[in-house]
Length: 88
Image (cartoon, rainbow, N blue to C red; front, side):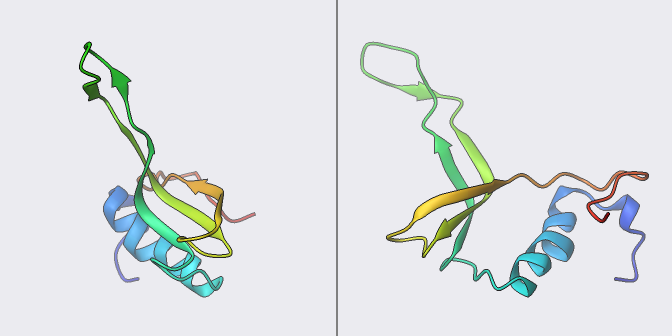
């Protein structure tokens, strides 16, 4: 991590920080967690059931796995902001 962490956008924060922390904690992408997971199908806007504004979470963690398990956590990543930290 040679870049200035405080200049990272959300995409870089996810790839360089969140993804690595999840992997280090034993979570396996597409096995225990799914990225860009739809958590709401959106608002119905007409009689045909057409929907708009569906919502996706950056990460949804499942137990015991993403295919037969239950969602247990939602993670939303944000761009890095100087003065904010996930570390105690």
